[in-house]
Image 1 (tube, rainbow, N blue to C red):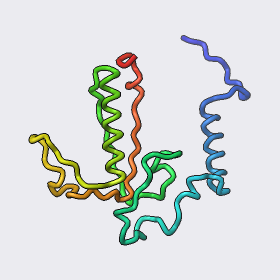
Image 2 (cartoon, rainbow, N blue to C red):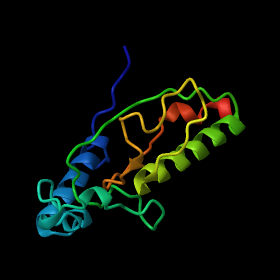
Image 3 (cartoon, rainbow, N blue to C red):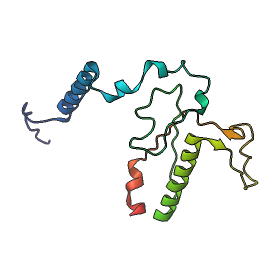
Length: 152
């Protein structure tokens, strides 16, 4: 049977660290020191949209990631995918294509032509002939397995 060390109350522990971080976060939120609390304005909350709200857009490139400090969205979607890229070049191509598509969807514009006959046309009724930016933001994150030995 393995011997256990007696717990030293002065020794740092994960539980004590998490409690301290939680208390600090709560204190900041209560005192108004949290930047996220200042980002959401009452006049921008869901349900108080202007008639041209579908044409409003968040900048895709900028000093902060869009969607983190923007007012609360009316809805959200969460999806997960497996990366099928086989090498670094495929992975880079994947992220460049993803960046281009997200930039277009968040800024809006005329639907691009779809030259692939196996795919439905962009104006098939799902998004329409004109893609409205609709204040869309996207946050992309990756899991730890993307950083394994596959890509060096």
